[in-house]
Length: 282
Image (cartoon, rainbow, N blue to C red; front, side, top):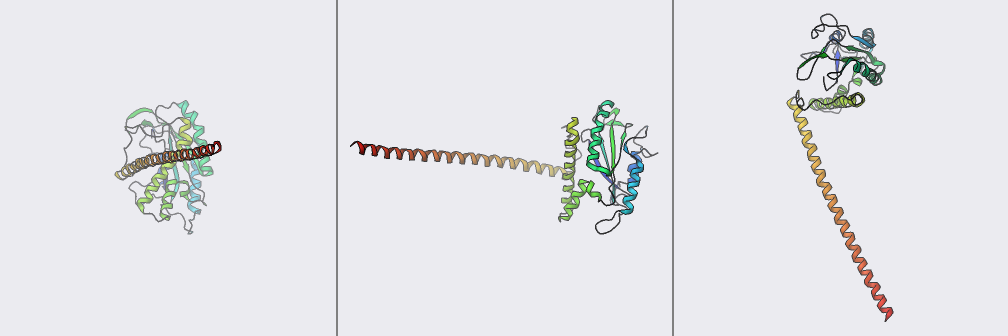
């Protein structure tokens, strides 16, 4: 989380039955609100600082969504249906508490603008140490916030999760599982770009990881996709250079041809004028 400073996850009442690590709503909220025994990764858990909303507001919105939501076919929300969008935004290594507090208003404004009244709560954790992406312990406070979005009962959860929306649209377009996964990944990349544009750049945060960390955590398939994209980009650039060279050469040829034709016409016209002058003198 040092450089890719934001991420989101989707949670349901039971989690996906096909997942070895199901994302369950109660587990997410228990960790975030520091319920007893739910934050084992923290040596000395402390209650979070509530910046907006409340846990009660989250619970009320969840119950309303579970009870009243119906999909386009009139079906109620399944137990493994997504109902909670939980996100984390992290501050950079070495951020001082005064810097952290200074940045908060911009972050909160961005989240309110993006998620509107479906943004149910924002809270801050200040009890976790900082580990960078290599696993190195820095012993400093890892300033970060959690935010929680629960749709209204008339809304579909995927409207709030760009990756799930992209995957759903891919299936609607008749694409296969792999192609739908690719769309999911690229759309989540777009979400990262938006976050960087709206929040990261104004605050001077880094978006990309350092070179020594790049390339890690990529599956072989992800690596092949990125490599193919780079190779295609290089090929397009080379083709563009060749095409540009041809256009310039053609333009020069046409220009020279016009000049030659003009010179020939001028020479013919000059000869005609000379003939007329000679006839008049004689």
